[in-house]
Image (spheres, rainbow, N blue to C red):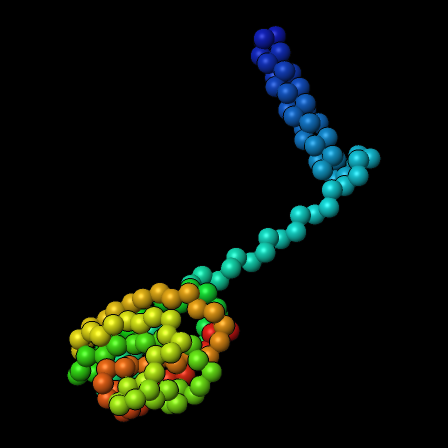
Amino acid sequence: MQSTRTRTVVVIAAAVLIAAAAIGLVSLAGSLGGDDKPSTPPKQAAAPAAAGPSIVNVQLSDFKIQPSRAAVPAGKVTFVAKNTGDEEHEMVVVRTNKAAGSLAGGKSEASEAGSVGEIGEFKAGGTERKAFNLKPGHYVLLCNVPGHYKAGMYTAFTVR
């Protein structure tokens, strides 16, 4: 047989459970739009984040320049140049409207008019990296170590 005290505790516990259920139902009804307040418009999704910097791996060999991508979006572009040849190479980034093979400047080198920068000469087997802030346009990547441009060490590159 239950004591009065035990019955009182059971009744109080039941009352607490009923009150909790009632509060939950009221909250649910409010979230279903049961009030007369005008609804707020749904939040728009955030605009997609701007693309991060582009990374272009470039293989410099005797005598070719081969970027991993032929085109990138405008903005910060990091070139990671690996010299897989037997000689020192460099990589000059030139913005121009001319074709890649039309930059002959004299002797055996290309004109660097329009250059936005370069990765200077580095040894065979080495890797160098450099970031450039590139605007949309046509570019030429070239090696201007004497004789290398004339040997065909250049390629077209596009920034959109």
